[in-house]
Length: 295
Image (cartoon, rainbow, N blue to C red; front, side, top):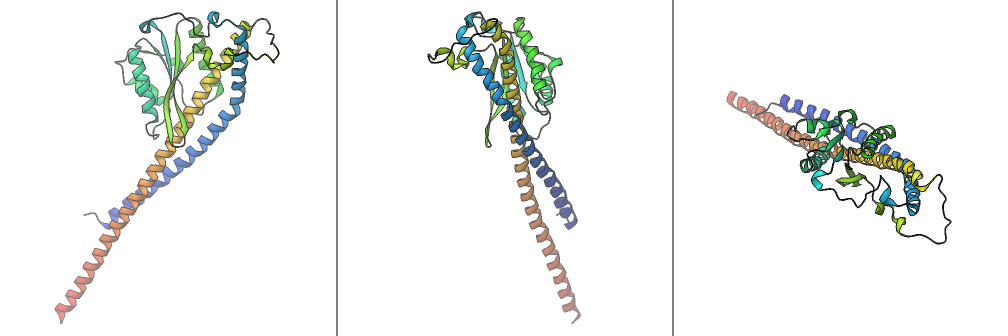
């Protein structure tokens, strides 16, 4: 049986842990708000790019545009894939990192010649522990998953666009975590390149009561300038979504840990009081027994 001192030390230890988990919860909450605000501030710009592309492709033959998918059929086994996997630098975020890594692992098994770009140390460490997978990791463009920034998204986007245009990669996908709401996050994969015309719904309908745009030097030339910025925006959006999902997962994990700590403290307090009361009862019994023996 534990002594009162041992139980008291355990209660103090759990109380210190609870302070840490509560502080981490508050920090994650603050980071989540900042991430959502950053995304809201940049969304209008990239939405305007999407609308601009929708107008431009009304005047363009997408079949001749390199950034857009064509009717050319490539056997699945020969498609040169690139995967950008977004994870975190730290743990204590539930299944956030595990789910993204497992989805990426399944894709890499299907496409063993794929190129992997890791955002976040958790993903990098995970795939370092799986040498049986025959993919190639682009070490130069595997970086920290701290607070998402546009320059990081721009740097990586420029690199993968160069690989795509030089035909070193046929398809590029992003595996990230999307926060549907405060209670639900899902791991998703989207195709970053090539783009599909159905992403821009207005390419099917021409409104007759609007003016006809004029593009200089040509619609194709303008499109080739606008699309890279749009790709950077999509990549930045997935980075911010993942970062927000990470903070949300960490908040849930820390809240659960705090509640567990409270339950442990409650149980230890009951045990402490029970042992203390038993010790007092034993002491009283001994005093009474001693007094009775002297009569």
